[in-house]
Image 1 (cartoon, rainbow, N blue to C red):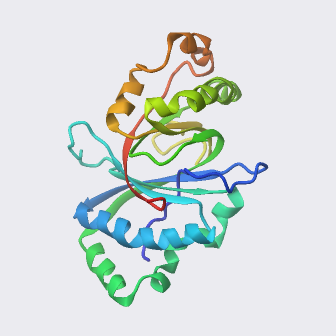
Image 2: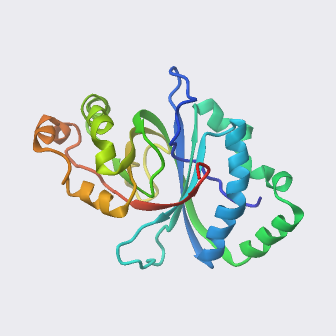
Length: 259
């Protein structure tokens, strides 16, 4: 398939991952213009079918399509409006030729389905995209939610940031995430791209994520309504990451290989 899902991203099922390997994911952020309903239809009805076979075969772990969530429901011209995520058990798997599962579309989809996809693709265009690859340093998985928030940062103390997340926040979420409506949490370290961006700024070095069943539960989490003050007092994030998060986009999870 022509430029269809050069994607890769998040993971939500890590039971098959061996302890010695860090699972990895890539977040493929895109700008799509034209008939967005047809774009979503291609991914949800047809490319998901191809991705699911790749997941069933073990070529990938997980794949999903995300849509940028905006409170005003207005698609601001020029900004990214979708993201693909896909997870792999290790970097070797991500770099393997089998990772390009979308190239198998002609052997998975019927002739009629391929004709439908071609017709639908003529009604929309990808105008921008960027791919970001991360190695996971710690995570808790309870299921697949409906909304996910990514938190990007460049902490002064990368090791301290990761260590605190695993020592303090991971146990907390393991114990409390169900009543918070949280289904997945994790901390990851960027492995590509690194260094300076085209605009002169540097790429963030860290990404954490918080996945929830509903947007209401995610927003409650944003205002720390469910996190006790004593937990915040134990945190040294003011030292590790004094600048805070540089960006915290929210995405709605439209379709995945898990459903």
